Image 1 (tube, rainbow, N blue to C red):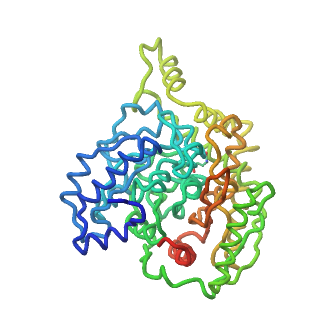
Image 2: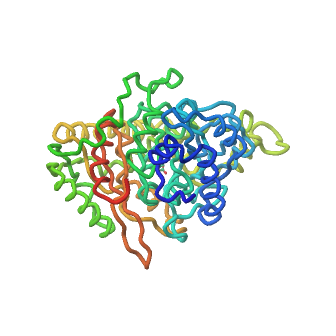
Image 3: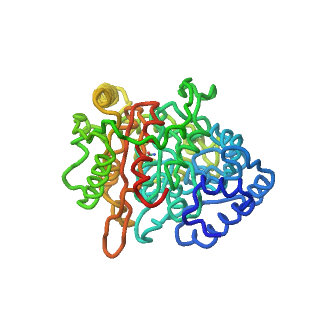
Length: 476
Ligand code: GLN
């Protein structure tokens, strides 16, 4: 069975009609991995026997009954490795299920396969994985985006129907754009972070990669909701995300932020996004230009706040409680120094050093405190814009997938990959990337992503806006 073109919704219909069993679907996914993943490198590990046992017992009357879902290697699945693509977590086995996994299982889904990522989710190309390279399914010489590059690539390469990733500054939306799939970052507090290895706790959110907006709604439905185990998850009702999905955008006001069309962005990306905006106009939306004046500070702001939080979160990897530890240390200082020195990669160390610096006495006020104030200004930009419009349309990434190695020597260039996605995390709002055509480069067609943003906890509206465009395209 070929997985190309198969969606969760489609597989569910086939199961209900008795044309497909959960075991057949799992085997089709497993075969696709065997046929394709040597070329893509999206999966780090998988436990077929365990998934098979779950598939045999699975209840197809549940909302995601019998649907295998690949999981980024930063989310704990009890009894499975959770490496965060870092050497420091080699040999670590997760002792419990993250809440999203508990919820997926309750909805009938089968967590199957662990996907590659930038080490501790720090990066935009998955090249910071200490384990393996992941290649873009549309061009093996290019990166899949990051940090959830494995989760995006396995969906883009039809080796999974859906996957989960995490998004701290764009790590779901940017790789989704570059691999040609749908990637949803829920609002901060919408989905529990319990069991997600923390990078920057005030920014991290878990969300799905899927082929269609309809499927994104189905997965979000399963994972959303308050969790007493995560005090930052908000206790607000979860609406039915599929109910008004097809209601269209006629009469809506959609804003185009002028700061999101910058000099130096790829002309084909700009052209595809402007075409998509015209599609919205034709669908009856009123298109208005808006301004988010503090956008220019977002990347700098993010790299202070995210590194500060990371430096604190990563202190727990001390070689005592988790994973790898240095051999025969001389004393405690040698133990810590060597465990962390050998266990963390270059980018992770850079972040810990930067984060420690911006939090240190004497610099705290100048950097961290100031960054928090700028964050408030960025949030207010969005609040003001959303007084005038129902949603925002922009590119997801300023460029299509770049070549492997191209940005590794220049961290600043790499950081700029997230120029359009970071602000949504700082503001806590929701965002989605959906495919909006291709850019032709050197004989290859590379996917372009349209980013849509909506106010916090307005995922139903976000999905509806996304679906309206998707319905005008071939797939879905
Ligand atoms: N690329 C950004 C970073 O390196 C965002 C990563 C993410 O969202 N996890 O921090």
